[in-house]
Image (cartoon, rainbow, N blue to C red; front, top):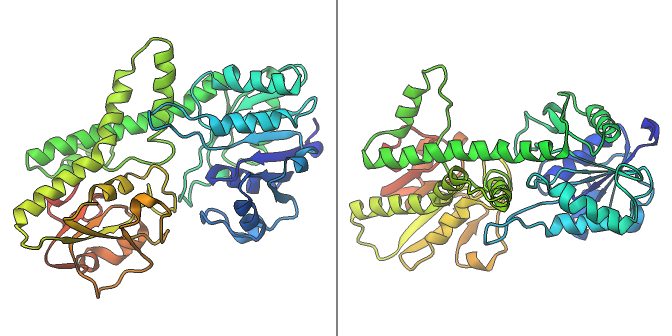
Length: 424
């Protein structure tokens, strides 16, 4: 497969896939595939609803978009970047990955290469995906076609660490595919690549990156629970400890999203399959999963201390995406917090500059506003996400959304002038 003959197909055009499509199209003829027709039509028009890619980068003679499998027959380098969430029982949900693999199995030809980027547990590609490709295509791996794994490292909302500025881990099913995949990725990534010996190593590197971060935040969250009970300012403790050269600084917070709050369950699933109970992994997850309830409990305690006479309190929640400066609400713990306020004692309003509404029946009683106005005053104001929009408003303006005796609670620890008991 010569460089000038490489034609790339990106399968799945979410936060990861669309970045892949745009960057590969700078060097290669590229097509982006997604089964969502509305998503394809918006991308064709030059619009990315996730605000991750500019119109000028979508309108590109080397880049096409389609929802038709028949348009993919001329392509020979396939990258699968579909979401791999978890089920309600915290087990891996591989239905998107399996569906994509089956579709690719019907398309691939001799000498084609398939690279998986979707997050999985170590062994998934070789145990599930490759056998499926062999069965459907009636070809043999490393003889008729080739596979690899390159874990995604896209960070939604991060304008500094773009796709080409992040080192990419690559791997292949054999030496030939490993070298070929690495060369193709390195041709579009300024930061360079890091080629590993096996697909399993690449898969494992992905899940431990986010599991480590999850555990670090869980530790700090537990510190914040302890220090809150001791009436100690958590942020002041962290700032003091950070003066030591080997202290790793993390802030307490809500841990959601499609990576940090999901990947540990993939590793835990595989761990249990080999008869090892991953105690630390799941303990950290438990702490972070319970943080919305912990925040709600703290706010209820503050309400009790105020002794409000009103039967129904007006609550304003600022931000409901899973992290700052992006429109992604997947697995948002703020949304879980909002659900806890759904009772007759509260009237809840929400504002997020990145998204104006949520099409979910569970939130039908919640008011999602298109803009903030000082005409409305609230008994409780909660800063839930540290969007730049809110940081630019500043503490004084945010405080003005509250009534005279209001509770201002900062989950993000962005405004240290707020009383320590009113911060996470």
